[in-house]
Image (tube, rainbow, N blue to C red; front, side):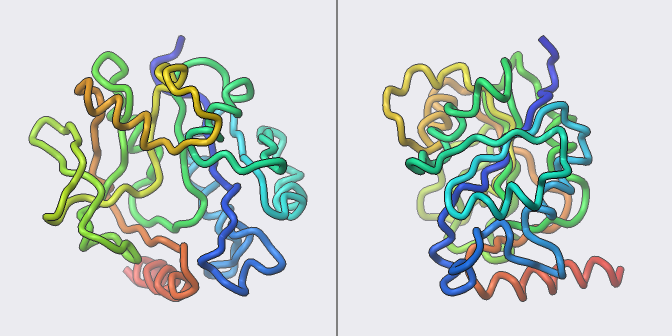
Length: 235
């Protein structure tokens, strides 16, 4: 089994309710930022690692994403039209398409600048020590992030849950071993459950992103993301 993951799970099944009227006629990944749908910004990160297998999960208005990606021969779709499964359940449902071993996972509601996100993770992944490697930024540097942070990061690179004080924001990109997913009996669940197992076993790590990032989970995030991209283009 290859040490570097060969498959990517691209999460695109969210309802996008925080986007209000913008998702009345389209799924959130099809909202445009700087003239391109969000899912294309995500696929830029995927294409930088030449993944062998890409799985996109679908729920709300899935036909729009299927049409948009129809020319991408290396993309398979995991259909969650019956019931949205959250991130953990969605990953488990897609495992037959993803194949064995660890996988990259990537959210489709952000834009990135700097070094390609998944390539950074690949360069630091060590399956002998890790079951999870999450890409992070200090919370104050994560554009559009609300809160004090999701995790603390120790000097050895291990993560722990942040509580109160300022920590690091999770950017929606990671490498994850799904081995322990069998310990979870629920059909619908968050990847937080797998992270908690990995944290308890000392096998959850973080990596600080070398670049910028902006969450596009709310309407105001579109302008923030376009400003981030414009600043980078001007450098």
